[in-house]
Image (cartoon, rainbow, N blue to C red; front, side, top):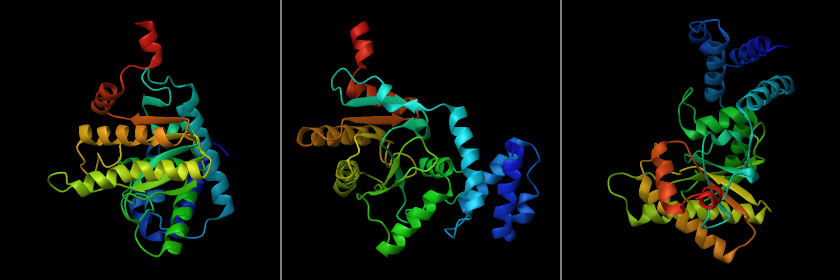
Length: 270
């Protein structure tokens, strides 16, 4: 089955599950790019429900090909900072990183973003991983029986991501001025993810900029908390060999660079 056939099969399957969206789906142009956007939209809004093996086979083939096309980035090959060989700064798409675990900044439902093609990292990670990720999160949340508190962490598989696992954490939502509680909860997000990773024998973890997007935590202070919490953890636990601070925006890259200094290759070149 070629890419066009994969898209059509997956879209038809999801519309059979959710026929209430068929009329809206017909407004999408027939070209592959538009149909791919339609597929992502349908995957984003699909609630947790049983997954068909044939659907997953086709979905996984499509997502695996897209991952290969984007290019997988080996987290082990990225240059460490000169100041700390266990810290890395990398700017790019976190769904390309081949590491033991990437961190997803979730909301308290822990089911991924339901807004079609939303630009948040939660949407990007679930869209690249496939519907299995929402299904596993739903099982975890049904067992827990209550919303996920800020500052905790959960671990799932990575499915179609290059990362083996996803660490899910809910950051604080800043409303107005940053409070002591906001700072404490953000630090807890980083600490909980590292503790859970260490508990499961994971050695390489890539963090996104937790809470700085839709949750409005100031970027400079969030980065300072992230770096301080990770370096404090390093002093008491050697099991995590490498932490990657993954940034997407130039502003975040500049902030982290000012905190971490140059990478080792750049420092040696100077």
